[in-house]
Image (cartoon, rainbow, N blue to C red; front, top):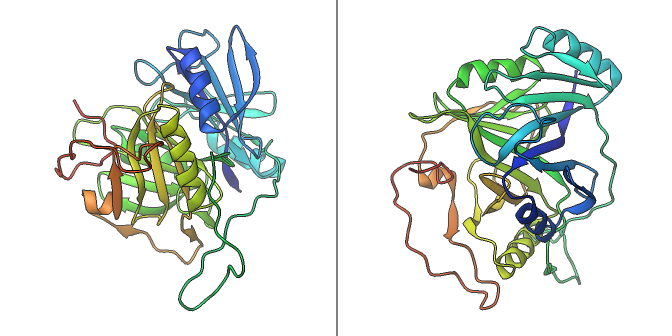
Length: 321
């Protein structure tokens, strides 16, 4: 049984026009625009749908305001879908329509699984030169004017049922990659793959909600290029650029009118069945090896002047009251 990643994310939002401008600047391709909402896609055909939050076709929200309303995961084959049908059929809200299995996870989030509709793409990142290996010879590294996200790489949700939600996803084939015991679990969809496709975060005052949706790009240079373009367009950085010690990925987070944050990321760890989950204690040095608060000004190309964030041991992307 193999789930291979995310096939579609649907948002219910308060301001469709703001989301239109934001996601076009972010690098998504606008496929369709109707009175009911917007349909975008990434380079490989991963779908991003935006609908008004009171659209009756949307599943119930797990929190107020703009947020993710549904995540559709991709199965590798019809045989995998048949196995998943047996494992999902007792979940709340289970039903099947148009080749997709639907239910709600224990967090209340609407999810589905279908045979992937994404397409293969010929995308090449820039190799890095290390001390012992010259992988880029007679070739300068690129500078990107903007990003074109390849796919939705992972989603992150707050929960007040960490163990229960984790067990649900492990039942349908997810694997534990790393964890903050009692606080957060990094899960990947299969034994071999990127470091995580989902991160579940439980804080002392957690309730269900969206933390961020992350989009994979080619390489570190596209993280920087995409982030600089978003900055020039006036979008607000939450944190970045920076580098995660867990997953090793380079990142840049932006505040999103579709709810919470969106992230560009690249160069995450790739794991196999030989990997053993590690335990970490939350803290700013574990969340980010290094990071720029407030981002970089797109015109001066220097760090924006911001007030430093309190180093209180919280996850930097936590909602603060």
